[in-house]
Figure 1 (cartoon, rainbow, N blue to C red):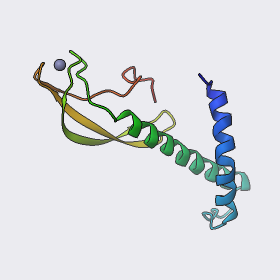
Figure 2 (cartoon, rainbow, N blue to C red; figure 1 turned 135 degrees about the vertical axis):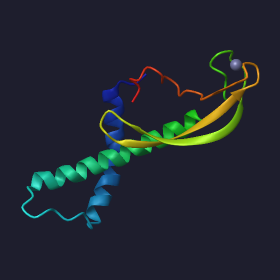
Figure 3 (cartoon, protein in one colour; figure 1 turned 180 degrees about the vertical axis):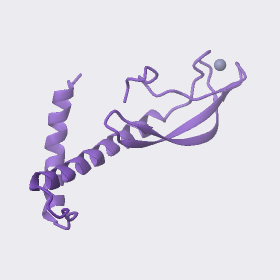
Length: 125
Ligand SMILES: [Zn+2]
């Protein structure tokens, strides 16, 4: 399994061309009057980071939502009821839209929300 550093390095190589292309197109947000050049670049960097983060969340969350939902109490396969949309804030303050599926377990006769892999400790994001 890759370390965070290895993943980051791989990701960096993958986005290098995309960032270069996007910056070369110009049409960048205008700098505030008197804004330091570093601050202008930092704003672009933060926006780029948020864009990549959102993409990772979107793709990973979409993948984790596949397959039948299983009841966390008895493991029985539940029925999908309805979807609930909410927003989760990451440790860096990025707001990520989250679509949760409300499910029902016929065995336990209760509703549940299938948790994401590795979630539940409050330290996952
Ligand atoms: Zn159950």
